[in-house]
Image 1 (spheres, one colour):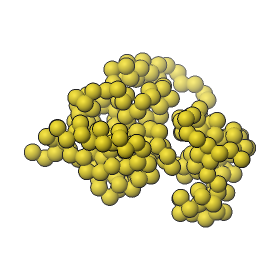
Image 2: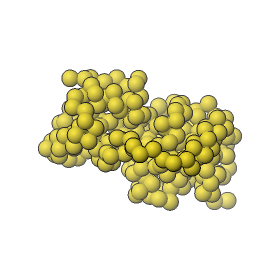
Image 3: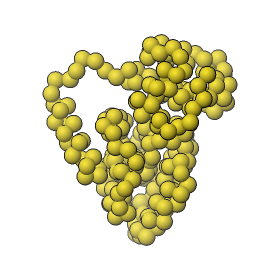
Length: 225
C-alpha cells in the first residue's frame, strides 16, 4: 500500500508529537517531517514534497496563511489542510483565497483528521462541521453583487506580508534583514512601501493591523518602540 506523505507544521512541539502519535496508527498515512515555523514549512515542502501539509495558522516568523500562499505557488501538487484553534471568518476567507483544501479546528477527533487528510489528497475539500456551514453560507453570499472595496491586506506582496509579521513580532530592521537574507536597505524599502499602502506610519499601528488581519495572534509578545 502506498502511503500518503504528511508534513506537520505547528510551533508547539507537544502538538506535533500528538498529531504524529495519532497518525501513526493509520496504515495509509506517513508523517515525513515536522516544522515549527511557517518558513520552515515552506522549506521542508520544497525539499520533501509531501502530499498533504497539516498547517497551523499562528506560527512565528511566517504565519500559516502566508506559508500556504508560498507553498501553493511553489509546490502546487501539495495539498494544505489548515488546523487551528481559531475559526474566525477572516481566517476561513483567507484560507479559501490562498488555495488551502480544508479547515479543521484543533478539537477535531483523530478519525476526523485522518479522514480530512485522505479527502484533500483526493483533491476534495474538507471542513469541520461548524466551519463547513459557514463556508456554504459565505459561498451563497458571494453570489450576490460584490462590494466595491477590497481589503488593504490584498494590496501587500508576499514579502511585504513577511516583513509586516516580523515588525509586529517586535523585530528591528537589522533582525528582519538577517532572517530574510536581504540587506538592511531592502527591509527599510519594504517597510516604507507597506506603510504607504496601508496608510499606517507607526509600529503600534502596524501591530494592531497585523492582529486584526490574523497575521499574528494577539497573544504574541511584542516589543513596540
